[in-house]
View (tube, rainbow, N blue to C red):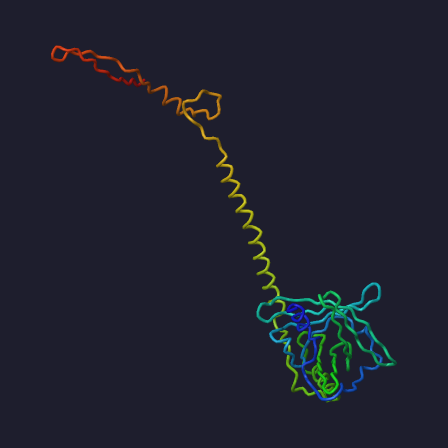
Length: 275
């Protein structure tokens, strides 16, 4: 469940964070909105204050059209502290009523299917877009809004057009925060490099351990050669043992008879002859 909330937070499509009294304002979407022109990559420039998006950066959305005609969306977000990127994919159902249109986005791959509805207040399709959503609980409502741009770091002239749309719908800019879009490729490359190094280390370590264990096991299974056994029998002695054996020969005790005070005493001597 925490992962689900994190992903939803990352793309800014969770429940809005700016409360209001009464039902949702009656905002109209851009007349004759053309989804085909809207396709492509959009970068999040600014958004309403959203506790779910705290600690995030490099947020962008890719809108595409499938072969079967379905509109698809892929939301990307990067963790500010770990630079880990998350991607959440969904399907868009365009609801058109007259000249008005709403985007219903469904995320079927989540453990708990999630669906959100929002509208495009205004866009020129080439540089900026202002999107808005609202959920009403009767006596109160919660709203969310985003400023999207085609450029990762849009110039001030483009943002001024978006600010004009906010003023038109009386959406206070006080509640907007800027999205950090700086050095996103560098941070992502560093995160990928770290992940690859960790994976490589994890892959090499078991192999080295296995080779070491195999060598130890082979050494422990090597037959132990014993001396004093005939050639060809298990545990055959080494050549060095044979040489030592041939060079040293122990002769049986030899009795030496001596006379001691008139008595004969037999004294045994052990002779060792070295060849």
